[in-house]
Image (cartoon, rainbow, N blue to C red; front, side, top):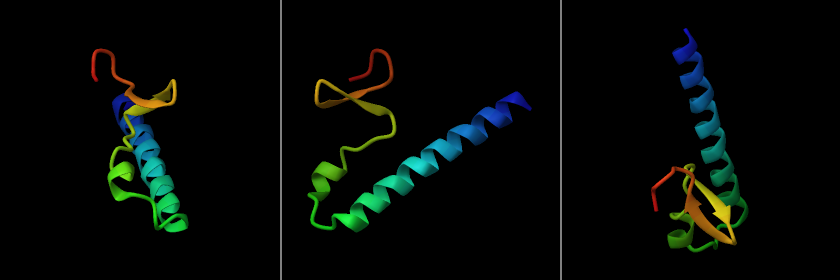
Length: 58
C-alpha cells in the first residue's frame, strides 16, 4: 500500500511538471526547442545552471 501511494505521488509530481512545461511552450511559442529539450524533472537550478538532482549523475 505504501509503495502504491509513493508511486501515485511521484506520478502526480511528474504530470504536474510536464503540464507546466506545456504551459510555458503555449505562452512562449518562439522559445528555442533545443533549449526547452534540456528541461528535465530530475534536474535543478544551481548557480544558474541545470544540474542533476541525483547524486553522482552529471
